[in-house]
Length: 584
View 1 (tube, rainbow, N blue to C red):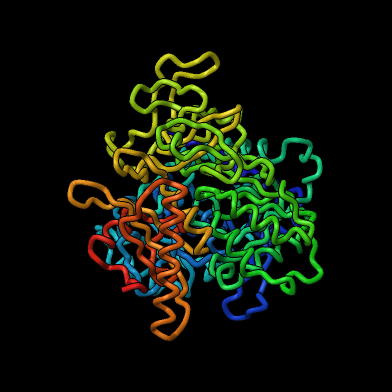
View 2: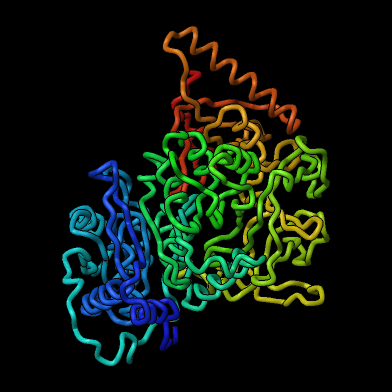
């Protein structure tokens, strides 16, 4: 790995500290000890100086190219750990701090994969972090550095500049997967990947005449810093754009979703992002009194990404906040993945832009539009010029015609070089080559995303993950379609899976519901009604018989750290009869 002499994000950080030293860079609000929130802000000059001081400490324990694992609660210390790692020339490894009592397997796996020289944390979390290290299979224990105990504002003089004589590894950080079906895998994100993807994102989101109006935008985020969308939006984009960021934690949002919506109204020209489930939650759990006196008319846009975007969710969110001047076009459905840094494509949503496709045709790998309200509703994305996106037949490696379902392939400077420390046989999604590419299309290298989609009418549509495809009685079904049908009835999380029974596959839907009625008879009657309604809806919409409906309490369905359903884990739990069924 050849070292480089410049890190774009660090150059921008120190440049902003020089040009706008007293402007606020980040504000983080903590709700742990005070439900009203305690906010702490940091200016560009403070952020620059503190980054340098963290880097000085880290350099005592590692050399250029060593790994620095971040295991800390969401907060400004996490941001300093990330930036300080890069400033020291180490490769940052952002991770979630495990809940007390939860399995340490994921942390241990990443420790074994990265053999870190240093682990960055806070004094409050340090005892737990020490336990994780003790239980990990490491020959040499990494040094634990508690960010909040350092002399962060020490003045070491300007010297010859923060980057003078510095060397940086090509890889800026390792973005670890959520580990939904396998051991977590670290995507090697380079400094160039990050800069390129930021430029692509800005070009797509702030085109169409909006650029001149976003000089004073505010980035609002509660997304976890260890997740690709949370890291790029909440930490990297503010520095690269110069926009101030107003941040809090995922727990703060889950406790009170209205905090997010209030932040959108309270901050000038707010730009934000969240996964699909958060829009449903915010629409359900935010009251008019929560937003008293607020106007959402100044929101620049909200990305809906990280999981498949459901048109019904966007519609509910837009309708819920319409009388606070929220408009349809503020919703920006987006598609991306960690292997492409984070962002690939976006669209602008409106209720009239919803597109419906015949479910039988989709099952056969073809896209045929149908009447509104029937078939599968999909959101559309503009095909970006950069990165390049094509739909490819996975067997022939040739481009698919319009309205034919294939694998989404991506080419661009945002695409990572590969997975950290993985053998060639596990790097198969990178470096793919097209056979007989069309005019204007490069031969390679391409990223095979593992996602199925198609192009119709010059727009991109995403239908689901290849590995999650359900094959029942010889027909393909997308679990997200079935889950969306059920969610219209139950409102909660749903997992659609296929389970082998007697050499065939049966459809099983695991559905989270809040039990109604205390009396045995009343509860049984209600649960029976839910089952009947769901069975009929799946039969009518998808032509499928349900092998088993499993009604479980909220929080029962296993998910990744980023909130995606772990369908393979659902299959295993079902086969082991481990779900606590409300209908037992």
